[in-house]
Length: 146
Image (cartoon, rainbow, N blue to C red; front, side, top):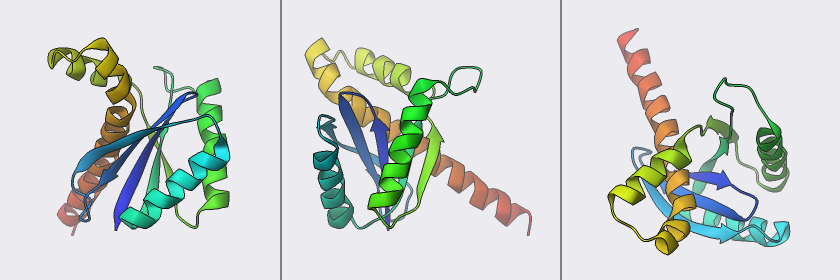
């Protein structure tokens, strides 16, 4: 089963999905964040289409690992997801994911307009890559401890 990653923003929500083996991350799309009911319907459609079994939600932490108001908003959205979907929702540190995306897009000489359209789904993909690396690292560590 696949994992869905969400980069939750005030105006846009970036989405990425894993492959079925949970090894790779692919940017999926960006949806507008204007109406919560529509966002939840869009997510329900994606969950059904891609057979999602886990949601990874980006948690915007400050550089000192403290949580600010954006983290509170993400935690509230996590509760909304928990109420709506019968799936586990985990939080993943998303520090510097947007900066990493910006470097990638600038290195690729992507125009400003196109960067705006790509940024959120690429950030979701980076969040998902980090999560997948964590769980793969945990599996490797567990195997070494046997």
